[in-house]
Image 1 (tube, rainbow, N blue to C red):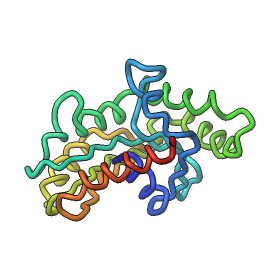
Image 2: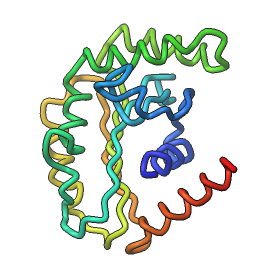
Image 3: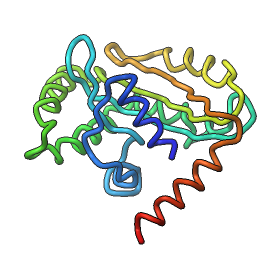
Length: 184
């Protein structure tokens, strides 16, 4: 659910284009391809580039929530995307294998040329979806740490979207119920 919210928000507010269906497991380590929760194309002042993102959905009342830490935490996942050329290469290949005949093929080619010229020239998004009261500690310290040692060309944006308090469980139940009706 958090990934769908993040994808929609980034499409409408950051100009991202998610050209491939959201088969989440197809992009995760241990499945067909390693990578990120979000794989997209992004247009900035220099043209099209690759954009990758990690999403955490949390109802944890702590600031920051536990989803920020550990080997599967948002901080570590973003550091991996920032620092690992092999992960970014796999995500590049993931999109490349799906371009044949796609409406977005020219955008991918432009982004690909840019990436191959500088494999650090990517846009990274860390996205929290929370249903607790907003607090700057959710992202403040992490922003500073992610900026340290950031390769030339990499741009990282850490976002927190706060929904009404305690609404995530209700949204999830509604989504599951709607999915069940669609399958009938």
